[in-house]
Image 1 (cartoon, rainbow, N blue to C red):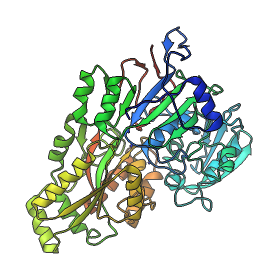
Image 2 (tube, helix red, strand yellow):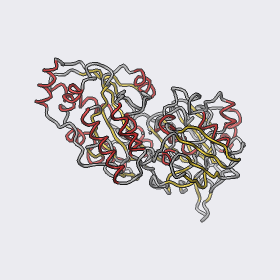
Image 3 (cartoon, rainbow, N blue to C red):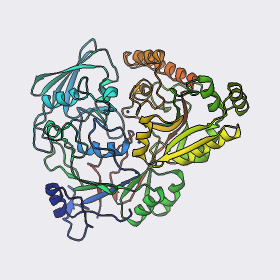
Image 4 (cartoon, rainbow, N blue to C red):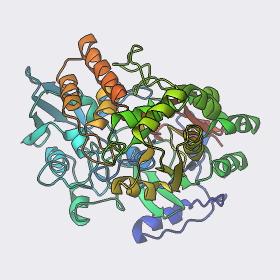
Length: 528
């Protein structure tokens, strides 16, 4: 399996022209706005503006793996299944019902009829097959980061009839249904749009969701508008603008001035200011992990003794308190404490700088360590550069030199794939509430997912056991075993679980920020 100030919002006429001509210009809303009303007669603004700290990498769910892309994607596309409003409980979506064979190898879905993609083509079983097939060998390409994650155990897909599809697995996978509600790889794209765009709709997304893509102005914003032909209840707000404001303080200023209605990527230092400005803070425990990863393919970081010694030099609880205050919890495991599979008995490397120094001297290692870090806020870590500098300082105390290179998020992702680092900083926002979604990262051979580049047969076997075990205490014990195995290898240094922090104007109604780090706008509106 998670963001300038001159806000530009197109009037309704201009937005309709944008759809036809592909222009990327927008202009300020004025009194010419049409008056929208709720069913109760409450007047509603025709546009909501959400500011995030980084630009999406693309809008084809098969080709991206970042939260900024995902926030747009979940409003434009839908999958066979969906999550409940405030949890990862599964609900029907494009599939109305499903049956699982007794051996757990066959999933048969009855699809919703009468659904149209935004380009007017029909949603049906063939569309589902095309979307999954393109992410299975031999069609799957290396730049589909979530494909092996979501469809790892899929053997093939059968069209039973126009509105029935059967997915066959190679082995039992108790996380599979949860995977089908995820915001990446699982959403269904218009086959006609795929054909028209050579199999990649990163710049021209077409789904079945409550909003349709209008325009993308690079480094500025993305505009989507209400799908008036949506199969379900229509969205309450006509237009949504995703504004890209990298600087945390600038986003807070934009919220204060009313130039944007909602923001995320907040760090603990901004909360009091947001409240003082009269805006609301959304603060819930986060389903995420913030961590340091060692590149296990580079000497001497391929040596567990070196990794362990470096981790011993970092006082994680002290660091978390200093950087995140009350808005993050020290990570004692990869899994957040409220997730199935969490175990309080897992023991991480303990802070012991004297032992760290002695062990590194014995190994003949004094550095340097090449560290890379992102300079955009992430949902699991809004104090990105400060985290890298803090660990640099801890290592300096034991005589280890570390250098820091920081990059914007898109460049950073490319650097991670290239692999030219000793240590990188990364994180994960849970996609589906299943422990496999976190712990499978260290099995995945896509290096944009498994940034430590671990390939450990024994660990892979533990995870395979977990996905073939029915949910319950026995399965939870398997994942606790996996957690301790990784802790003993010191592949990651788990740092924190960040609270889900976002903020919004009190004029915004029905505001909600999903545990998966996504934001669904269908039911939100701004009272005039």
